[in-house]
Length: 282
Ligand code: ATP
Ligand code: MG
Image 1: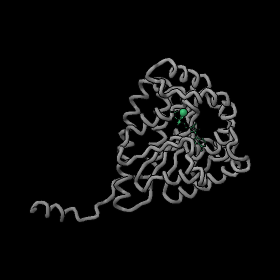
Image 2 (image 1 turned 60 degrees about the vertical axis):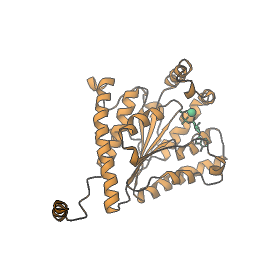
Image 3 (image 1 turned 90 degrees about the vertical axis):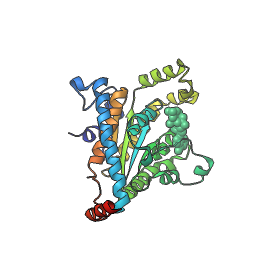
Image 4 (image 1 turned 45 degrees about the vertical axis):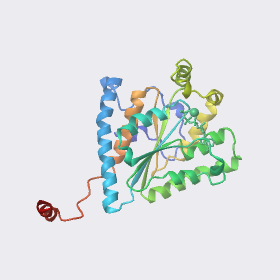
């Protein structure tokens, strides 16, 4: 079974995050379930990702296909989105990659529909984007704190599904990943940030307040994962207490997704023999 199948949130069913052990390592058993094995393997997968990325870019350049890819990451605070971006996206060519973070909306963003800023970040054909947070914040933090009236956030699940269907039709492959940590692991990571002067900058006192809403966030995640895991853009939950597992799993999900696209180098748009002869005389 592919990792995508193992980690997929079933479509059209009620999903409960508490049924997934954040310390588990699905797909890695025995001696493979170790930091050493997973870190080594990550390197090899990364090489494969760079190759796919180059083929995606070359094909779009030469044949004009509209194919592009978005890796969308969501997680609780300290869930490891930044680390994942560094480790997984770090294996790719920066020229064909954008990493976009979606924080608290700016005044301008608030004047538009919630999908406005997301649309602007969709990569052009041939390119890759990583979304560090996403349109889902508008049914997570916004729902937990009722930043807009319930009837407004309630309508957003369907709007998000319609939006993702539209993107898919326009050639965008969307890989949605939730990095799932435990409440204890979050505490340990916050504690680390408070005990290491080189990590103070990562600590946000507001995160402690949000931690008080842990259960509300988990419920909001359950609804979003249940309602927005669709055939065209399913959700995947990656147990993320072990960073080595998390990085291996996200890289593997991405690799499986790209392998499905049947990428290859485009054929020449010129007569190779003729050009060789011309070059010989040039
Ligand atoms: P780090 O983990 O390094 O702190 P981060 O992703 O938490 O990174 P921040 O800039 O600290 O980055 O936080 C972004 C904040 O913006 C989060 O608390 C997030 O919930 C919030 N946010 C994102 N989108 C929205 C939104 N649409 N409405 C309100 N708040 C949002
Ligand atoms: Mg933060």
